[in-house]
Amino acid sequence: MKEKTLTMGKHGMAVLLLSLLIYAAAIAGTVWGATQEIYALMAPCIFLLATTWLLWPGLKVLRPQEALVLTLFGKYIGTIKEPGFYFVNPFCSAVNPAAKTKLNQSGDVKNGSAAQNTAADLASLSNKISLKIMTLNNTRQKINDCLGNPIEIGIAVTWRIQDTAKAVFNVDNYKEFLSLQCDSALRNIVRIYPYDVAPNVDTTGDGVADEGSLRGSSEIVAARIREEIQARVNEAGIEVVEARITHLAYAPEIAAVMLQRQQASAIIDARKMIVDGAVGMVEMALAHLNEHKIVELDEERKAAMVSNLLVVLCGNHDAQPVVNSGSLY
Image (cartoon, rainbow, N blue to C red):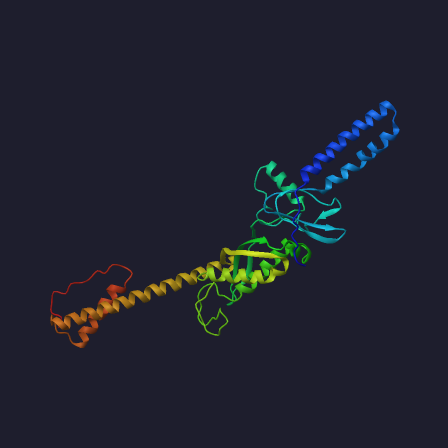
């Protein structure tokens, strides 16, 4: 169903004042007719007193970034989006199937005073649809990455209603629908990536191994999650503005083991750099000795010198050399 925007005059205040004037005139006419015993005047005045209030359900107040989806006896009439004080057909009803739905998102979370919470509760009972940008922060999920490691991940999705007719009539509850699709899309994308960079893993689907990972490619992963969610909620008239990863960690049952693995990998990488640097320094020292002919060393003495230098350069503690006052030979 396609959205139909209604453009109508903002006659709410005029209708309200007219109804109050009619009430005042009807009350005065009833009282005067009763005192003068003019029953022919009392009958229409009593009728007006009994029926004028029927105009009041048609009075609608819209604030900025709010919309009202109207139906008349089950038929979709249109949507009012402009702020103002309107008068519509009193028999029209506003529809918002997600009005009472509470999710962990902006506009639904109670974190203020009692008065603010009461106002929020009253607003949630209204059938007006908010067109503001809202943030959905679902609970953290435990998902296995492409290597089978369980991880915990959470995302925050900013969204807004783009088509009110689709949001109201195409799905049963657009808030619950969005929440479910966010969880489903998150699982589909996370299962493609490893937590950290791993060899021989293709995350782009082109058949070539790459260095994509959840920890190192968070921006790319978030963009793919947003695209996946958007493709799923188009039929609900929802626009996904942005998706961000708010929490990423190994699951508690393997967190300690994976931390040790990361520490070991870091130590190995550091040792590799130290050894490469030490070998380069030894090569430079031998080259300088040979170039300037400071001392002539045979192969056995060169091997001993290289061994000593590597021990000094690669050791964990400061070296304590022993000075040989005798001959090298």
